[in-house]
Image 1 (cartoon, helix red, strand yellow):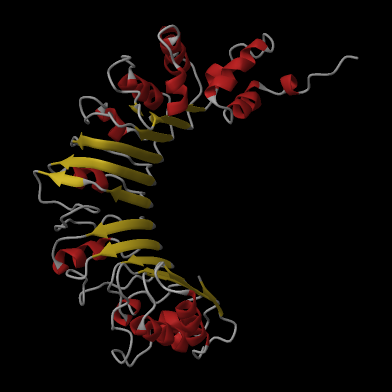
Image 2 (tube, helix red, strand yellow; image 1 turned 120 degrees about the vertical axis):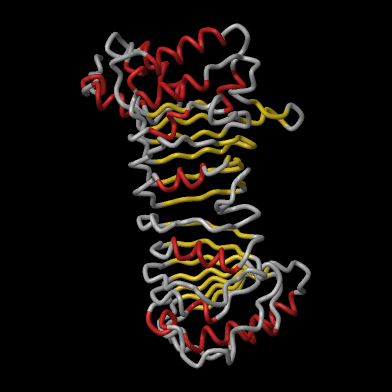
Length: 396
């Protein structure tokens, strides 16, 4: 009985789109189906090389693999790329890290990145333990590509020195992890990402400069007035001054989602802007007072992750109730090491004033608390008065 091959009747564009969802190895295998399929894999729009693929390469097939990548990325007249992803991997618990850029195999990682950029790639995701510096190891054209919409650089110890001609005019999401900015590179970089919506610098630092280090040890004055398009930010501040932290908030006051971890020594008590657009706030630290809630009048979701204790700034400090509690706040999640009187005081204040609250989740991370103690605290919390009758209280 003859079975009709309906899939092969699809256009090349649709077939290439289907192949983009397969691992690169499986996509290549389709070339043996028929003459029509022979070269389709070379036109896929999502290219991903991960650590698992790297571990499977041997001395016998490594040269043929290099030729294959050259054909896949560098041949002219190919379709534009949606995504180029290159991830290192861990071989095993005793073999350590397996890296594309370790120098042993002489992979042309910089050339691969350039080829992806030349093909108008929209997303680049690099997780490389030996990425190198920008420049010379990583092409500086990475920061002048107008097609890029999403960029993730997870590059342990890499130094990034951005040239004056940097321009990422269409970049909306930028994640940078464990890298070092040289001189005023951070200033140049952010100033030329005009439509940035989601920004995260995790465990990064600044060398030989006095600019801002958003998620590292020092926070200094940096003009962030051009970040009006930013919608989501993750900011971790451990050291610095209250004035400089307040200056940072001024530059991001239009965001919709904020994750903030800040030490109590520099938690601002004044000069805070009003975050009119902020809908979601995740606060990690030991100080978050009622005063701060006055700065987020339209907040709908609040997550509080206390490292040690809840503090004592929740009662009797403000006569006026924050408007977010009265009109907008619907979900609160509190994570705390131990449930004590300060925490009960905080929950009591929130329940008493959150008029439209729909759900309150309390998570205790203290494993030393006995079952009896937890039951006692649970009963105490459930007996607190609620302004919102439809509020569900969940205690974990």
